Image 1 (tube, rainbow, N blue to C red):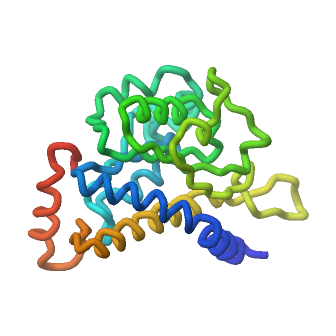
Image 2 (tube, one colour):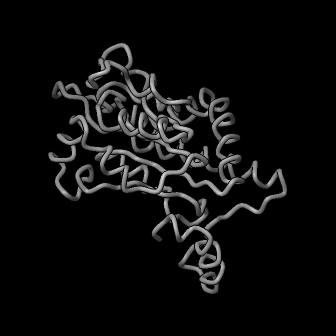
Length: 240
């Protein structure tokens, strides 16, 4: 079986298994946006790439804010970002610098759901009164215990969970020539889930006769005024 086939099967399964949860989460995001809230996303290491993928995106929602503190970013040192994700007390001072409001939504991304930084980010969001959504793989639940001092995993502290169904270890390909599995799927699964979720948000806004704030592609002539007008509403809270 090749990678494309595995990914296609995985996406089909995610479509079936996540529809109800996506519908539930999208309803609450719509209520947040109607009250001038915004969508924050946080992830460490490669999970941060998912948070950034839906930001400032052609065809995507405008009020999207990735939280990207330097200690957790790959470009500041991949090994360091992994170490920092496992440290207690490092993410909260970073979040205290962010403008998180009770009418906002926080999506915390962590494939394993076991490390202190994403768990503490979720707890901080809950303390501030935000709707907190965890995006993780529940396949890790039975096999990988939490590294947080509370003993709780991410899915135990968030309000709602999007399950990526990524296998433990992330890699899905194998060979008879060597033992190690290879080629990850977490980025593909996570991106598909986030874009599916935001698609549902846009559709629900339209159903309520609310014009969704959607970016147009900057590579198409004549759209600058459209995008600038939408961004002006959120510039005090999001750096574009």
